[in-house]
Length: 232
Image 1 (cartoon, rainbow, N blue to C red):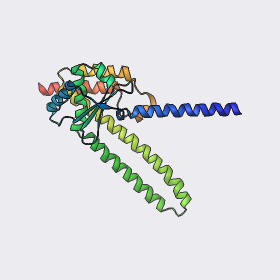
Image 2: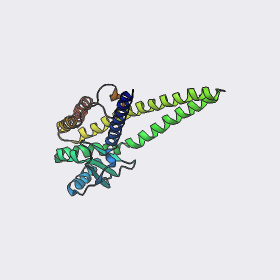
Image 3: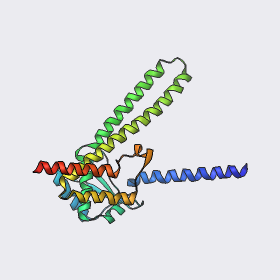
Image 4: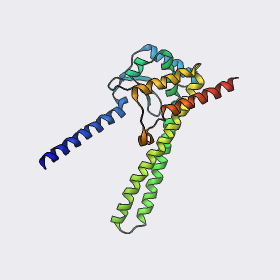
């Protein structure tokens, strides 16, 4: 029994350690420092002028994790964080495409829209839970119904917001396709990032904020074709 107990504890500790490591990777942008490269700062200003938006005030780099990623931080879109690995694998035109994608999130105000939708959904769920539990006289029964309802409500909010962020990614990709002279460059970039980061599969795709690479590429091709017809 003691042997099984120790094995169980070891498995639990290992699982907890893996969960903590995955959570840290999810928050990769927190482990960043100021980027001093003048070329990237100038390129960011150039790209901002292309789509008519304020350039990022701060550009930071994260070197802690082996991932290729970029993210805009804050609702005012003043800070961009890039991973060191991403910078190492990109050429100038590819970096321009990444900057276009991140600026697109700002131009379309995706962060603010997501905040408003998330708050509205949580408010509706909270008010519904309060209404349901207030009609129940037994406090124990109210708790046994209210707590599971809130948990299910939270999961529903997560699923809905993930669907929304997937749509936002496609919108940003379409803007990139409309601005690049060669959209195939962006398609190859998406494939390159997929080869490095891998791709989530199965039920976990429901919790991913990004569509699959194949779906993104299909939309990039469609948007590029639509835009080329518009220019003609």
